[in-house]
Length: 272
Image 1 (cartoon, rainbow, N blue to C red):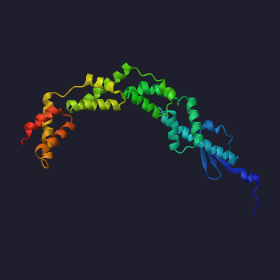
Image 2 (image 1 turned 45 degrees about the horizontal axis):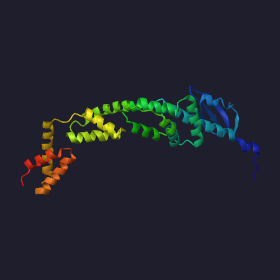
Image 3 (image 1 turned 180 degrees about the horizontal axis):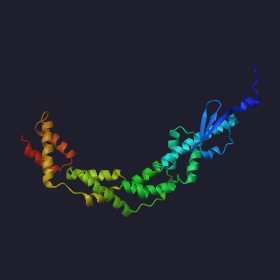
Image 4 (image 1 turned 135 degrees about the vertical axis):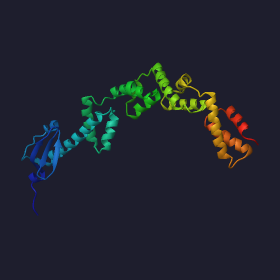
């Protein structure tokens, strides 16, 4: 059996060539493999053509190359949007980065000022939430889900007047969105949408009361008559008398029409 010397055990590969490109240095090895490093990372290794690289150094080179790739990936992300520390780490793990690389890349990004959860929270509150018209409950939920620390979240100040102003703006949008809904249903739709957007119920009700434009009586009567005929046609195939009236009544109530108007329409439109 041939004995393997300590020297042979340690040699991992031999550098055969180096190519310097704009944003990277490509290292070619005798084994046929090649590794790309950023110019900054390349200076951490004393590499040249003909150098024998032991297993430990080769492992460090491969690890540094991998770290460079993930770092560049993060820089591209930040070139398009803002991210919290948790969001970036989640993306790195999903790309296959190990914990050591995630920690190292996170530190680099923090040193550059790209990861700054306090600045991120302020930007989210005063820019993003303003643009998207988020209420305070939605804002706090989003920040917590993005991993912003409780200390930062609890330090955020959300003024009541600013909250009302956003609610009124969003209510105006909803008023146009639900323009074809009966008045009663429209108000409920608007309040529900405002609450889902993160506004307190009281603020939502105030905004709806101030911004809603109820459907005029003539238009609502025409709409009720149309839905009545559709419901009558649907249910009269199976029901008659009181059961038919009950089915139509429930159908029209779900659509948001007033109870009194529905009953009057049914009495006029169905003869027992």
